[in-house]
Amino acid sequence: DFMREMAGLSDMEKQLKSILGITRVLILPQDSDDIPAVKANIGKEAARLLETKFPLYKKIAVTGGSTMAAISKEITADKKDASLQFIAARGGLGEDVLHQANTIASLFAEKTGGAVKTLYLPDHLSAEAYEMMMREPVIKEMMELYDQTEVVVHGIGNAEEIALHRKSSVEEVNRIRNGGAVSEAFGYYFDKEGNVVYRIRTAGIQMEQVQNAPFILAVAGGRSKATAILSYFKIAPPQTTLITDEGAARKIIELT
Ligand code: F6P
Image (cartoon, rainbow, N blue to C red; front, side):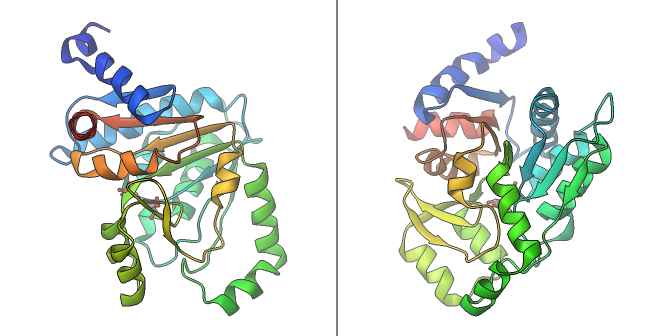
């Protein structure tokens, strides 16, 4: 509309689509690094877009983080739909409860009348524990659900920030740093070119499963995330829509 034209947002959306190699980008005004309400607006916009997908797609996997939590606050449903199924994309124990994929999936389900599948496991598993978990029927069932996932909604983080926040081991932080990782999503750490530098051994959704989903929504804003967004979109599936803010968008354009 007129206001967006005035602010040059439509123009920036066009630029970002071409830089990131995707067909849909939505930019909210201002910068969530400075103004917390901007993150709430990203949440609102993401919720409205997702609601349009509910009649079509029923199996929806969600990750954690504060931007995802902002969506869960905004999601609503005109008519309750019991055929919707929200799937926690990660175990995520160890993370702040409100920002866990499990909590967010539960909120989505509660608000839309759908069902929820949670995964309560530590994010980091030893090789032995991982092997054993993969043989557990409840975990196998989650893996099958990830195979069938139609919509993936996820955040993108700064690699180092996330690594430190997760209380990763010194060895892990060193691998992430020395490998030049700048972004993180789904437990994968990527460098500037989009190469996987490190990945957490987790029972969550795998990148191959994300790639198979017909609709993917990424939410990340703030100029501090520009490098992370650029990195992740080197490998992001082309069916990904990005909802971001002006702060991140301006910085991305400046960096390229
Ligand atoms: O920890 C879950 C997660 O989705 C990460 O994969 C991602 O990097 C991060 O949260 C994004 O969090 P936020 O939206 O708070 O920046």
